[in-house]
Structure formats: structure tokens, C-alpha cells
Image (tube, rainbow, N blue to C red; front, side, top):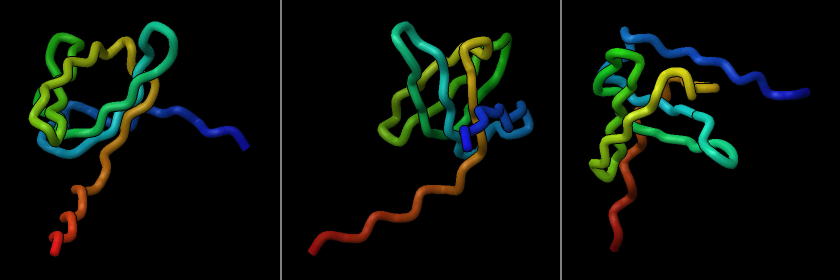
Amino acid sequence: MAARLVIRITTQDIGTRITTRRRVQGGFRDTVGILEAWEGGVLKVRKKDGTLVEIFEETLVAAKVVPVAPPRPERM
């Protein structure tokens, strides 16, 4: 069974954690982070390292809301 690529996010999801897959030259690129803005056809996603990624809406092939990342266990 083949996987279906579906965009399941809207501007109502601003402030939530999302995962995206977009077309780039030579293939695809995935981004996971907080959707900070979606204006003028550009999504702004803040990754956990603080990087702000701008994604053009027309390059999206899949996207969905995902749960908040679980806390990492403390090292001993």
C-alpha cells in the first residue's frame, strides 16, 4: 500500500508543532518545528535549534500537526 501525501495544516495551526515535506531541487526536505506564521504564501517554522525556516506554500507536498516532543531523559 502506497503512502498518501496530504497537507493537513491551516493558518489555524499557528503556534502548534508541525512536520512538513517540501520539494527541493533533487528531491524533498523535511522540517519539524513550531509554525510561527503563514502569510503571503510563506510558512515560517521555528526548529528546536532556533532556526527559522521559510517554506513557500507551493512547494509543500505534505504537512500535519504533531505532538510536542517528549522531554529528553537527563544524563547521569
